[in-house]
Image (cartoon, rainbow, N blue to C red; front, top):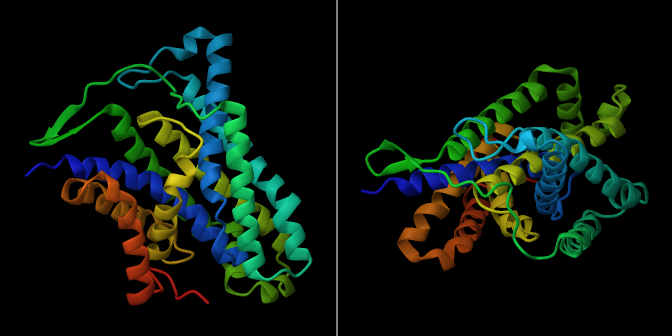
Length: 304
């Protein structure tokens, strides 16, 4: 039996999981499904590409590949810069759009529809600035290493899995062991009561946007490193992100990552069974099945 779909599914699932964390946190705190979240992955990747290209032009040595990897130090530096820039973009969108709607007492469906509009605007602006042609962090070719019979992986793919694991563990520790994380959990449970207890709900909301956007940027950059960058990459990942967020359970960071890996593996093995053209349908089937059979997901509670 060929095991290669296993590695491909794990890598794709790790990226989906990173994006799904932002979706689940946004829903848990702000009580609406943000369909513009996928665009943060795209923006994160393109912002990192811009910073990386600028660093490579100023300091060519930063473009030299690091050890077995296909990229140089310009990409890790650009990753950190992109996390900050993407977080700033998310805060700006919230200030311009979602925050004003919340203050006016808009219903959840209005926020959801507004997120559709924000997604269209962000995607088209991205395509206007960078064009629709795919872009790459590097042109270096990697040779996949044999791990097991029928299973090969490139150093970049192994790095994606390792970085995703470290990121989700750090995020989980932040939410469970820090005062900021406890404040976020309190607002998630009961915003009114949390406010009466002295918790700054506006600060919590800002933290949610920053954390979700930063993780989305990491996911977008990792996707760009192993595949390519294009303006529609966030749109292509949107359904898997929501499938993973709901399967994992709203508000659960480990659940989002485990569910992301599950969705990634299901898509990867489905390609070999029914063809690549049905790949997107797998996420839809998972989403519908979870909503019918277990709406609370693996680790979460049922959505209100």
